[in-house]
Length: 97
Image (tube, rainbow, N blue to C red; front, side, top):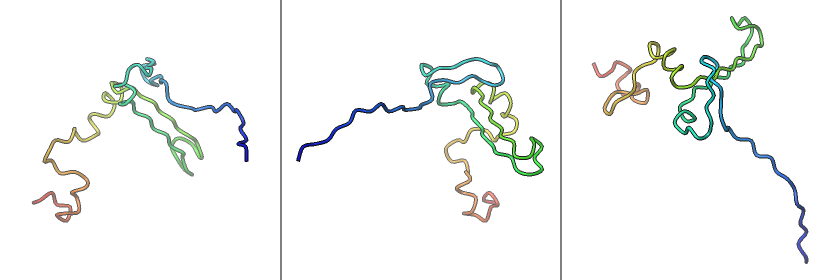
């Protein structure tokens, strides 16, 4: 039986760059570190949200802006041997003390 073939065009979407919502700098695929370290937050709000009922919030930040905004709120970078969230239940959540 002969094969039946059909040519078709397929569109593939991929991230090729972004613009930081804070500093407005643009970063492209040639900057692998920025592309890997960008911060993107998407949130669909519920009833009574400070953002508005049913609002959608999207934030895109370069790593520099994300670090400036969140460094004081986030825990520091983990180091080898430091307890992680995976370790939390192993000692009853008391950090080994």
